Image (cartoon, rainbow, N blue to C red; front, side, top):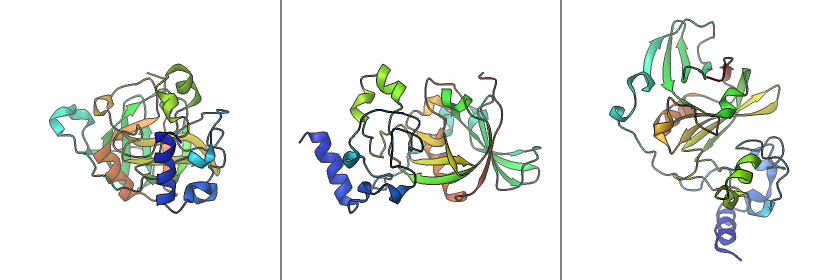
Length: 229
């Protein structure tokens, strides 16, 4: 057994073998088809027995990036909000690199975000369908094909500080179906305010951790149309 297989198998055993049951985490019977947790990987061969837990069994400390390292407009801040959305709604503005948590009519907490190709690919109304702390990541098929390093995690990378999904992830569903659109943390804080090559909507780990604790499954989410800017 390889070191990687041993590591992932140990993680599964550490959580009582829950990785063997797709029902434990929702629609994960086919991690490389629809409804998997990190994106549409489609059709890649995998060993489901090696799929790591949906959440890390370790609650790692959430890293805090000093404000001085983030441009002022992308720092977490209370702002006026003139949208029609009701309090409690999350509003994603991919072109301007902002996410709003509407707290009351006329005001919202605004967070700076980074956007990847998937962040421009979906728009509309959804709900948070799942929440994960230190979530696992399964690289999309296209990434596996173009990046040999991603193939190491074709069966999923356990959650942790080095995981591309960061400290927390919110999974968006519409009409009961996974949109494959994610709001998640990042271990690349310099990506906030930028359009990167891959991923959905990424936030500073400290920001997604705060937001994660304030929203529940079922929270409405509006993703504004994007020009792909």
